[in-house]
Length: 471
Image 1 (cartoon, rainbow, N blue to C red):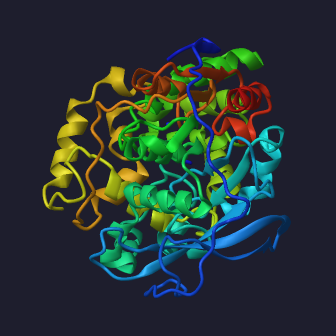
Image 2 (tube, rainbow, N blue to C red):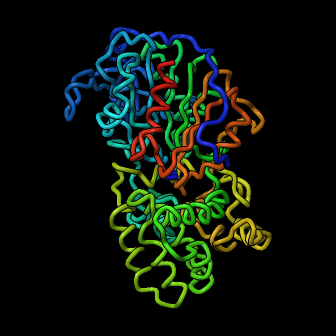
Image 3 (cartoon, helix red, strand yellow):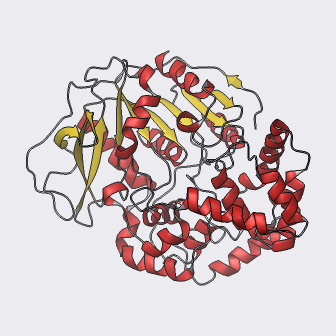
């Protein structure tokens, strides 16, 4: 959602102004030795942040460790140590700003200095906090085969053996890596920081975490920034927002660069000719990180549609090499798979559905999908995407309850931010968030792809965040 996905106005909605001040303490709360067990260091879970010291790679920041239960329900013993980093502002007037990374599977602490630079204009008013969510960074869940096959992609198709090996390696503890578990970790982090309320800034999958936290703990949220919003109910295994939005994105980029072909029509012809829709969607989604104008893509698609696929294969190789290749410390595919399989609703039900019968249910879904839902791809693309296939073969596992799809976000200011070139989380997805937020502000940045605050050349999105947070 790096990964893991309309309104054509640049600014819509109104900005609510009801928000209290977060209570921040002068330093990270800390504890002495405790009685934790399992994978932790021996501190009592959730009672503070230990080992505070300058971060090794960024001494202007403070790093520490939050110890949390492996199982927040208490039935399975064990603890996890999560790295935490904060900026030096100890009495920020607006309290703590928790920045949530994407994936699922990306750590937070390694990118802290870069995000701090992006958010520098607000850091006199906020103390910035980032942490490595469970199963990421130094504590990454490791599945070497799946990591090699998928890297940082949601969509690349893995080998069946890699899926089986990953599920076996993680075993029954895979069920403790859902978004609900991360939400519970965040509330322990909030308490350890000494906060009554947090301001949350989530990107991609981070928007799902921020939304779920706001629904679970509405009294502890001051305001929300949701950048490159994922579907409200989490990962869409069929990616039915990204499939049709590809035509809009490619045609807009083509118009901006003066190309003379119709890349959407050529994409449809290429899918018909080669049956490679899943590989195309994966590559196009990755390529937006290289060039949000998709400058080389129209020619590549035009030649492939005409039966000359050499440049297309080079394109696939480029994206795999330059974008998708990632270590578990950069984006853990083990965590990615465990979370999506625990969280998501599939054509066959949930991961608690017996494995037998899942494939038949998926095939029935493929037969019901229409060209309107999937063009310029085909129904086989929607049912052949990588993370969907991982969960198709994932062992039967208990899953946490989902929030009601009808629950609204708490009545706090909400900024929805997206780019008009984003295929991973197309801006059409902001509509459903807007319906469940109170007086949201919506900003769509022209020419921007995924992760507007961090990557967009156009500064309009970052300025919108500054204005929103400092209001």
